[in-house]
Image (tube, rainbow, N blue to C red; front, side, top):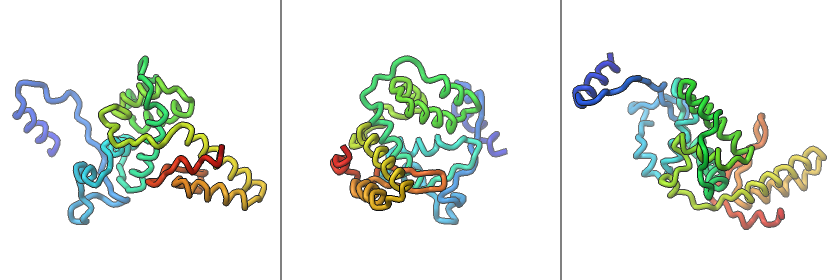
Length: 222
């Protein structure tokens, strides 16, 4: 009775207050597709990740991206993708005051068995729609984009940079359709030179800001 023992110990330590009305347990934590365990040598703590320079907000984002009832697989790739997305989000809503309440779609997801994965999906929709005020308020509900977690953000990513990158990818896609591979390669090389990581997948093209991103090298697209 592992959980019962934890409850009993906590109640004894804090007899003056109600310990909890609801007890939830997340699924198993994996690392790069394998169960985390000391015997496999892949055990680490949040403090270990912070000491490696991974921002706390990035760690939080990765955890929230998986429903607590599903196995959560921590990977270096997920951390990179989370940081890239948070850079875009902070550039989009960094100077916006969170007005009004959280978006109904985000609240509905959280109210449905703490579906944080669904809430982040709703946040992505708000981001695409350009609703900066509702987006910022909804993100803060999840503990994201809060001022105290933003020390790691250097502000290099901007909405204008996003637009230029999307424009370059559009030109590249059109050139590939027209079999003009010289232009397609030129657009990809320009993005790579600017430090943008472009990936072609079965689902489509994805991109993220690399550690050496230089927005000045996108000026040729204007």
